[in-house]
Image (cartoon, rainbow, N blue to C red; front, top):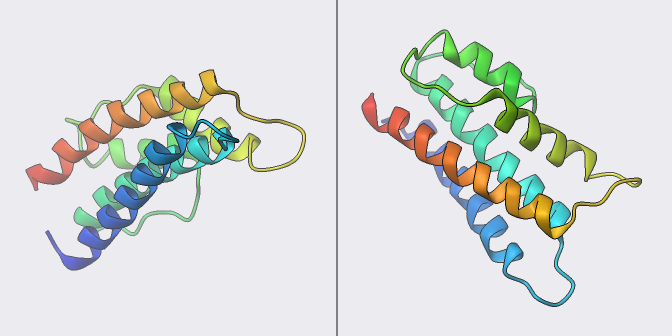
Length: 127
């Protein structure tokens, strides 16, 4: 594994830890941030997998688009499109005025993040 891939993984782990920490907050939790960092974790892991396969990842936050590009590279990686859609929507919609994440949505974002993170780590360890 090259140093650039390791750095992407390190950044993804930072997002994962931030989301895990924030969801535990009992006073004034920022559920929007949980959703954002959960999405960022998965985005960075998918991009790390692109780079590991010598492909420059596209500059997008759309997890479905990233996955569709990646799926062509790695046939073993099967991620649920609905999970990717949820995280993409959660990260984008909750970043701006007009919509706020609640605890249930933040917990769902974390559950999805943990599932996808496990699958992507398997892919990253294979090559």
